[in-house]
Image 1: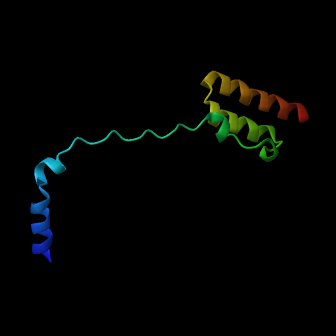
Image 2 (image 1 turned 90 degrees about the vertical axis):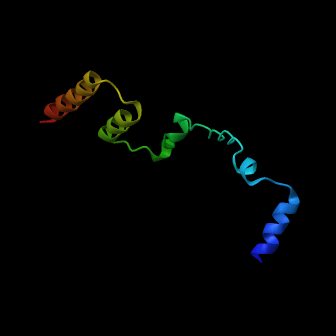
Image 3 (image 1 turned 90 degrees about the horizontal axis):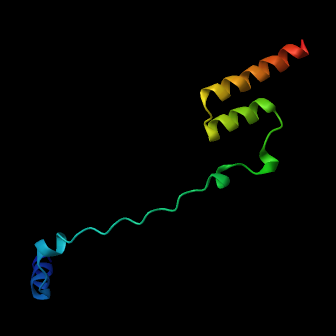
Length: 82
């Protein structure tokens, strides 16, 4: 069977080196996901302010100064309840 395949290859006129050494095609770039699609639907967002703050920190990646200010607001709110 290998002989028949090889003889058929020779009859086709193809060259092994030039056939395999063709330049590669550029890979098709995948479409980027938009940030709006990554956000959950409004019905799935919890009402807990802490979870909202954490989600915002993860998705938006704010500066450290802004994160500290947000945490201070949570501390002030908790102290006010006491």
